[in-house]
Amino acid sequence: MSNTFGVDVNEANPLLSRFEGESPVMQVVLDIMKRGVVIAPVGILIGYLFAGSAGAWSVAFGLGMILFNFFLSAWIIQVTARISFAALAGGAMFGFLIRLGVITTAVLLVRNAGWVDLVALGVTIIITHLGLLFWELQYISGSLAYPGLKPGAGLADNSTKESVSS
Image (cartoon, rainbow, N blue to C red; front, side, top):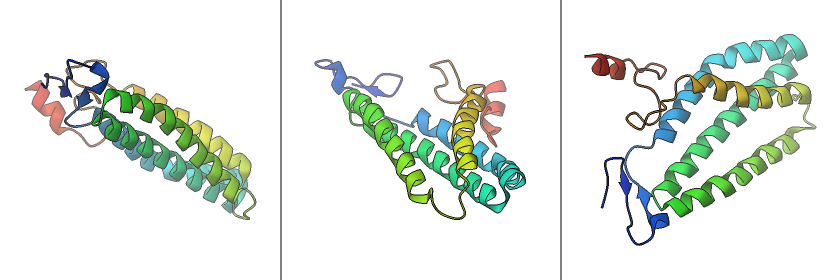
């Protein structure tokens, strides 16, 4: 039995309930990725100004890693939520560990490459991760009426704003 929030409720065991419908988390992460692409040229320029071409390449690599990390996180949550809420909890916990391992492995694989500036890469990973999350906070809806993004708040999403205001 589904309720109005797209949740297939299992009366016998609530942990086996699952989410159906459009994933709000994927909507949010796609908006984060759009913002990441918008700031990429500025970040790469700053990396170039501080560390030359190695800094620019490091910023580009770090930004790509973080955007992939956000997408992988949303994908894991979307897939596991459609299985069950118990799978969602496991996906969130173990997905974090897997994604942390992927970032660590990526950095360890390129740390000695000539095109990498480790300071620029590290700063990019930290600032981009936190910066994009804090930037996105102002566009997140705190209401179950609009899960995910606020109406009309997404980058290049004016159609929802017009339909809500009419």
